[in-house]
Length: 345
Image (tube, rainbow, N blue to C red; front, side):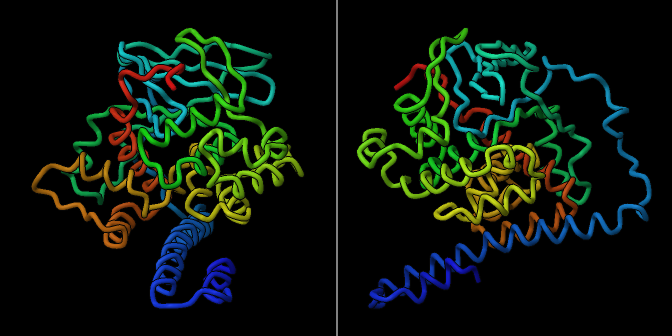
């Protein structure tokens, strides 16, 4: 059990059955998420140890794959910065170390990267092919997910990722997008984009100087402690965070006061593009799997049995990466509002 969980259970002043029940529920939730991170860590260790003795995979390597046809792919738009306009264009801002870019995509068209500030290469993209889905997953599920074609994702920077994960806690779907946009508009920087004005989230230095009333004005008062702690951590060593590999980043983010392993894992996933880290207890993952499955294939609604089945279908990290990304892409492909542009309030 984590130190935070022990602290909660032993904190003086929590009395009565109702408070004890709440404490036990929180501890149980923390333990479940920590178990997921430990499972990924264990799988990574096992994979690394056996890598040299493994037979060469029969599926195509990244080098052998065909060039990406951007007109026949599906965008993974799970980050709350993505918005969708009435014409079907999906876009967002991405801030890099020396530049700010606007990324836009529409089905049947290639990605459009527009440099708004600074210099340097455009944001990186990652692709996942249907043949990366695990063979042991139910054929009915894999067949449905593979209809999405190639999945393309655009990782963001760690600070934006942890900000989004904190603001999205307890506010799934469109509520998370509204919370993110309200925060960015209130305290970030606004840019003119090809699809209208949009804002990046405030940087760590700005957040560390915000007062309580600033959080309240942006509807983020409940997240003040976590965002302040995260800002302090990023300000202490700003260069270290982008250089961390996925697992190390997830663990480091989870150690920040008020963050917790769930948001940390989601943030590390979105910052690195490694979806093997994505927590299996997350409701969006379960919803995507259920929506993709045909009626005669049972997908558990409860977190624990769902996670157990999901781990069985996708034990190696590479398989879990693909299965998680496809289920999330299925869930979020219609999850951005078709009437909501970047200037929506």
